[in-house]
Image (cartoon, rainbow, N blue to C red; front, side, top):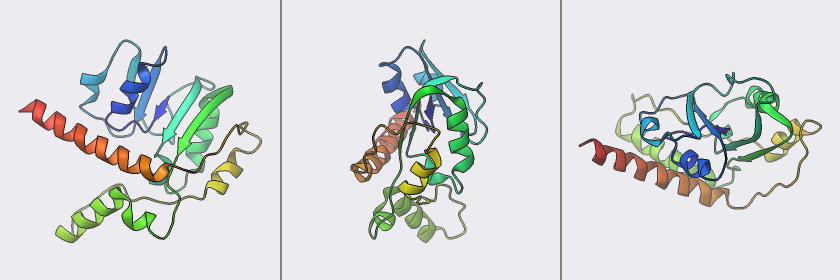
Length: 175
């Protein structure tokens, strides 16, 4: 399960490596119709109430998702519910630092848009959760195999660049 797949470009890459992949996002993306394949299915759904049976997935990927959720506990509960016993969770999320909040490309874009149009409603505010809190939640529920805190910064910028390139590609394709 690719949780919070956005437009699905990462899901498509992941699907090439696995037998079956389900990609979920709360916002439907028109790009999904171009990216679907025999082993990749896109689902419009909410991480707070995943539309899957208990113990449905061997692996759940939740990269750069948790920071958009005010209270991640219900999402973490859903991850535990839908993950098979002995399954694997791969998650990443930014850790707040002095510069990370200001230099996060999603936050910068948001701030610039608000400066241009203060009345504009903009989604996607980044909420920082402590890694220790997330790990504590999973204590006794999942077996922690590793916890790497490096690289999130680069991943956020890479995800932002890929997302904007994908948007530009789809705009050019539609013309």
